[in-house]
Image (cartoon, rainbow, N blue to C red; front, side, top):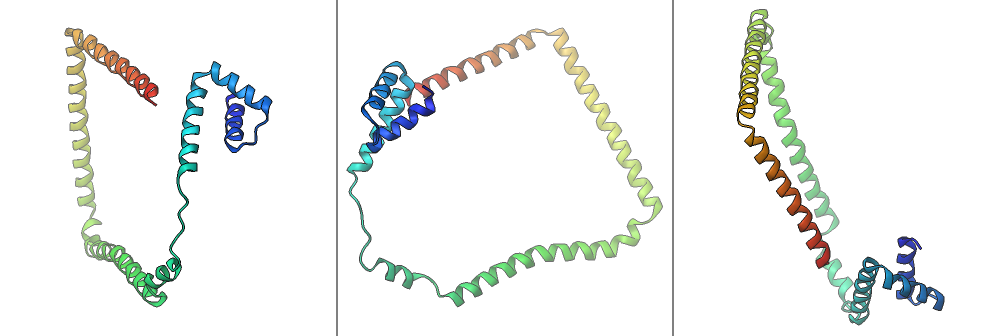
Length: 176
């Protein structure tokens, strides 16, 4: 049987809807499958806890008291309107400031000499960054070629991390 079918049998057993043959099938599977047996024990414990918990009923005047504590509809509408207005203004003020600055700075920013110098400085910055990154990569490559023990150490550390990760997962799964 598939584990989904066994799980459905477990639910039928808890509800008292399983036949004798289904109960025997479930018991046989639980003896053969420790994972399903562990799941069954957990389900029985939860079911027992729910059945032993006393049913609580609310106080007689619970509805009236709760409705009396709620703010009236008009105050709620005004409060929500104020909150939405504040959020709207909080978003519109920065946009208005950006529009105003764009309007004031547009004549300056549209100068061809300014645009050319900005593009030239961006190109120079990009070239400097690429030279620095190339030098760092080259230096790291030379260090690894000259000292291969670093690669070995990194592989050992990665192996230890994966090993202990697997051990940790096994420990966690056996504790549940």
